[in-house]
Image (cartoon, rainbow, N blue to C red; front, side, top):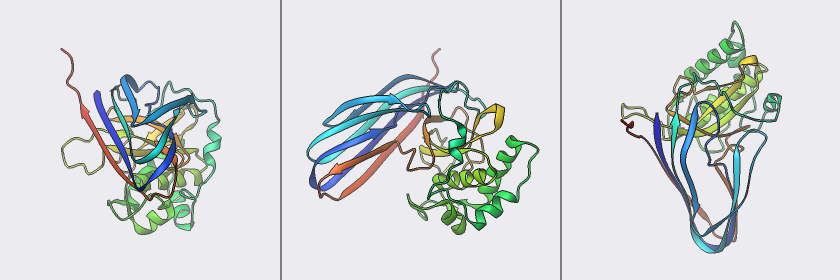
Length: 270
């Protein structure tokens, strides 16, 4: 599938800030399921700094904006060719051990309810168990926008019984770690067909490490493994760690945020 992506993040400040420093994880991953044919990142009034590939295989680059500035826009545009690998992350180079993803965070810490959910499932092997955990999370947390926020934890979302893709991913990560399966949060994009699917083009899911097969993606919010509708950006221990845009503004201005993401399928060349 050929996907065209436009992603714009706008920051406004009620008082001009002296400047900003940003760390962007906005370049698609390199792996067998996707190939970037065109990709551009621009920060209005910004200067690109150093870039590097971290131990998890994600490309991160720094940008700075000199003030005074009362508005900053981060714009991404590009095209990616994708193919279905049944959720298996093949050909993705990384140097850190999967075992580091057994460490809980504030957003993925387990409580009694999450432990009960995790241990209620059996499995013939690690892959089967991962599928069963994903299905259990999907049953336990109904998709409902607006009831959770950026800092809602997995335990809180499970207690509510409602949430969005971030909450499904956090809960699945928590359950997998309870069963000693390394798990991590993935940020990216989803091409959502015009058939009533409620999920945003900016999307998130979990990856679980299942032995010799390696990392496998699970999208509990949609009840599937990532296929050619998905574009993978990067990963982390949780949503904060995997955020596509992280940064600091210098000054007293109060910040407001607006995000616009569009993913559309390109026509195939004849």
